[in-house]
Length: 189
Image (cartoon, rainbow, N blue to C red; front, top):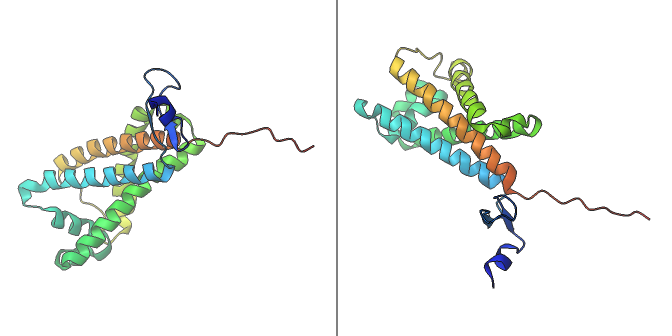
């Protein structure tokens, strides 16, 4: 089977520039697969950032996950062991999914978000930082953040801006991944 014939099979989609030589064809992905993959990347990237940043304080992944779980359990999360670490991981990835999904859903109404994914993604990421710190954290068991560590704040804003770009690029790929149904002219005669 020729390369071209193989790629023209049902279930494959073109994510490149049509039939140009630089076009890349990959197996068709469902929109939700791309969104889930974007959320997984976002959540993992954020965990790695927190782990690396707090390494000098002796933080490991379990302590980072306990810190996330403190949004539900408060200070008691430090003593919850594996249970609170799992709750922290699940809630963290759920929040990452919500971040990606929110950008995707808004982009369905505001197509401008797809045209400039980097600049609008950066703005979205900064919005996410302030939303998390001024809305989500205050209503959680953590309460209002102290904003005492300026280095952490600066790096968090930068990283959230990059997370926003990841959300925007994930949305762009997700919107292109699933082929749109072709409209056919149906005669009702």
